[in-house]
Image (tube, rainbow, N blue to C red):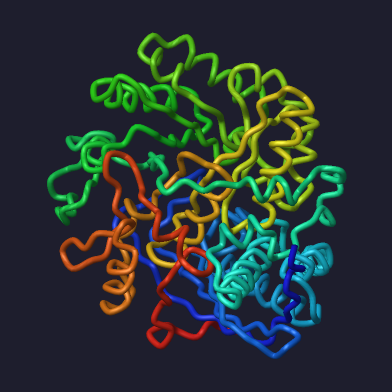
Length: 473
């Protein structure tokens, strides 16, 4: 076996683009109408002086990483910029090492430094996750490998140094067995203010842009059979809305799958259990209830780890999302009866891989069906969505939440030449419609062969850097 390449981070540049949504997206207590997307370009060198560039991108979604009402959207964006600046500073100072050893050398200190600046764990994770993806992309390009091939051969040098609970687990064997699929089912999000039926939209409010505007129109347009439904924590309103959603799905198909997302809107496990009991008792939700796969982060992160949720998990499996603030979160959650955890690029590529290894180890050890799910943070068409799809496929996901294509007008905001390049090179993933490059979902599926076979981390095309704004310092 060839030893993993040792590299150093020598340069980093950040850029941004504004993103305006065509439809408002409500999650938890926040309604998103616009945000900024940050792009990172880095250069690495090995000890022989060979170098390569890498890139990553992520939407800076306000009111998800830090939901403090005292903070404005601009404050949230500045938190994420600061997290990235801290991560890049730490990685540049880490010297020469494998891609993963650079990460492991700085992870704990980065989180501590972020905490000293009152940046929570999710905010801290954002910056390090973005930097790690760009470095990994550069490593893959330096070695001429698609990311799946690089991970299977463990070219980043991944070990259990940041996850000592995996000591004794054969990580190299686990990584070598990862087999990404070339397509994933799209799990469509139903936001809290989404129109359920076309008739819910007043004629004067319709966009008439040729894209689906209601939930039932999205099903017809994309052939969807997987759904992620937001719940508000207000039981009567949730039951009424779920009945309306179920009526649409039940009329259109005989088999489907649903996940429920609480987005921290419940104060306790008992409140969640009450909602689930009411769902199971409602005749109009019989098929819907039987189709629920799991419940995602129902309890506010401030209380989610206060006491066991085993009684709640007896209804449906429960996973953490916003509580996944650091590499130890899944270990803590497991002790309390949670059996699942989400994968999001914004929380960490290596974290997802190590959590996937935990799923394999713990399921074998306990006989319990631990699981991961692939969730979205409105990743945008182009670099961001492709890197997240590559990660989800690599860790064995068969369906993934995708909502950016629905709430945003394709690759709106990107120059025409960039949109054309992505559509041409990744023609299985995109289609051009009305002059806009858009994510292509047909029969409920997203084809990603060009993504997982691209040299680097998911993309054979670079964004047009010269058309972006410099990121504020």
